[in-house]
Image (tube, rainbow, N blue to C red; front, side):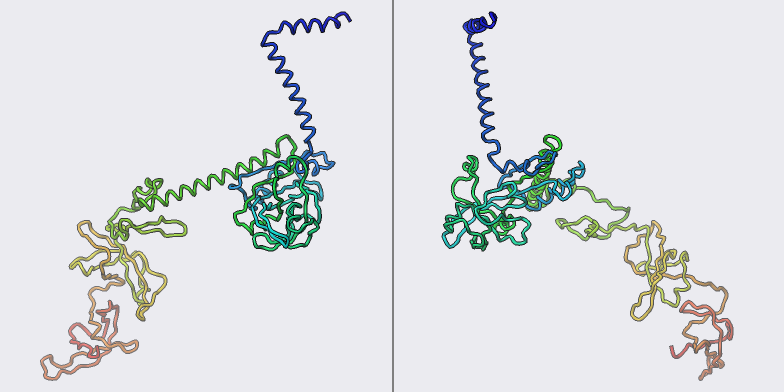
Amino acid sequence: MRHLRELPRRMLAAIRGFGFKQWFLLVLNVVLVLASIGCAVGMNMVGGALTSLTAAERFRGGAESRFAHVACYLPVDDGKSEEDILSFRRTLEGRMMEQSLEAVEGGRLYLDAYHGVQPVSISAEGGSASVKAVGVGGDFFYFHPLTLRSGAYIDSEDLMDDLVILDEEIAWRLYGGTNLAGMPVTINGEHFLIGGVVARETDFATERAYPGDGGVYMSFSAMKRLNEDAAVTGYEIVMPDPITSYAKGVVAAEEFEQGRTALRKAEEELSNAQDNLEITRNGIANRYREQSNTQVRSTIDGMILDVPVKEGNSVIQANTFNDGTTIASVADMSDMLFRGKVDETDVGKLRSGMPVRLTVGAMQDVELAARLEYVAPKAAEENGLVLFEVKAAAAVPDSLFVRAGYSANAEIEILRREGVLVLPESCVEFEGDKAWVHVLTSEEEAPEQTFERREVRTGISDGIDVEIVSGIDESDRIRSNPNR
């Protein structure tokens, strides 16, 4: 007891001995303690003041699972579309499946809502006003359960999007009351019906956030119809939060990925615009200058036969959908190819590998050796004749220059006979399967020559001369066929 009675005296004596530094630290600690007490009291006063911040607790109900309420707010000039919201939902559901997060039977695993704000002009029989319209989607009124004065909330599942909810401030201005369900209003020249009237929340935060005139709530699709530039600027979600900050991390990661994709798209659009400007000014974009100066190499050694493009012409690279632009025709002049046509009566006698003799009309006394490489399997009709295409590889000596496109004749030896009697085909008459010739029976110097018509048996023919197997001999004199 004696020590306790002496404690105040000792403390007073210690305080009297404080210097400036000790007094400063003592005052600072007292201020910090008082500030902590004040913050705790303030948090207790405002905790739960906004019902829009209690969505996670309401959605959780009596379940043991942890849920988090995450809200994202975007710049007005960089909002999202409803397609972005749908894409995020698909990504979110995929990630929750990866974490084996599943909803209870008959329940939902998460709730979300989104909104955008646009100025509109609203009018009714009682007057008109310019107000801010809130375009809503998802379960907006679950997150913001505004007190209904009349009617009902609008639902994003409604097939029609012509219902609006009025704030009671604008309801009194337009109609002088709040029982307005089913009454018409005109917004930006389009007709809508009032679905209900809501009261503002009366807490201090709402009064500071929504000063001035009242507003109107409509479906986001209706707002988009009124203004095609409308964008989602706010998104909220209540989702499982099995570990602290899991929900925040999922939403933030997806938002970051969408932002990075948008940045890349914008950078590519800027780069393309700069390229177009450089092409207009200089004829080529700087970032493609190195590729544009790359040499185009021929796939074979040879001579350039034709350059169908000129300097300054646009060219296209070959790809799956386009053959590209031919900038030069190149040929190996030492590897010439003869192309010709053969009548159907002779094509059956031809086979690959047969020797061919070529004579070029523009080169007198020149004969080139060739070898038959190709006989077309299908005929082509030309001027009433049935012809087959043939190709032969010509051997051109180094000392001889042959130009591409020369016309030439080819001779193919099908059958050879030596030491036989031949006649020009013009001296032979053909009747059916028989052949006849006119043999001179009088003297050659006789005033009137006489001839005997004699049957002969023919052999092979080259189309000009025909072999005579029997019927005459080399001493006979034959008359040319007067009918030819």
